[in-house]
Image (cartoon, rainbow, N blue to C red; front, side, top):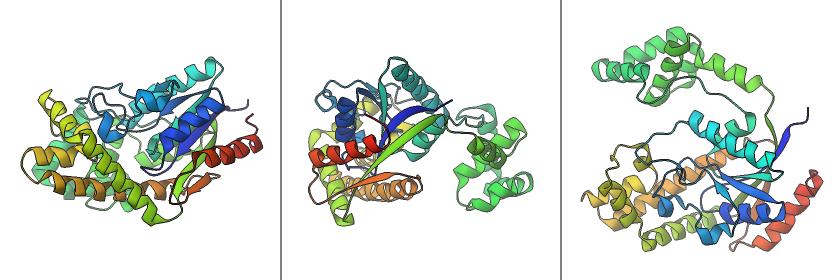
Length: 315
């Protein structure tokens, strides 16, 4: 049976994915599904660059502002919810347009990949975190080398989060995480995807675009948005508050640094994140890149994307 078709718009932060996604959804009778690990949280519009009502231009957007910022959503939970949106859009005869830069989520959603059991706050995760506090990472890493040497070999001893996750999978299921990943990757993809990648031709222009975005966020009231979340009782250690922009501004509001220093920290983390996003995206086979010059020309980009879609059988 032929896989169901979806259209993806990916790229590093500050590359115009929202505008391109809206333009393509208009062109192909589509609806947008945000594939962004932080846009899911309510009350985090400015810092996550979540699309405003004006930016969506009447195109339905899904998976934006659907979670309480005090919650911690796993990749598995995100993919499950986003997949329901995709299936609903398809059932209504429209085209799902997946827009975002969280590569793991995008890949898992297209593949229909399942995630091994385990979650933050679960009994096994809690036990592992207690062992980490009491004994350090050494004994846990040694255990992982015994039960899942393939995972242990790939992980740096300082990568505590992934070491705990690999052990959690083994203790929860009796199977290694490497075995689970191998089996799920061998499955055929759930959706046939066409991916448009956006980036700047010159890295200096990408850096400048990121800096302009952060300046605009600060002017739009990012500090006030962070303060509102904290005043509403969102814990500083919540996953949402670790997002780029929120962690730095929360520190500034506690008096740990000035707002100007926090903004510079946001710019640095955003540039580092963009680099990681590009590394991930370059591994996507058959991605169709549209490279901006110093200024972004959406009309020309839409024309180019339309030619790509036509060649791929999308009319």
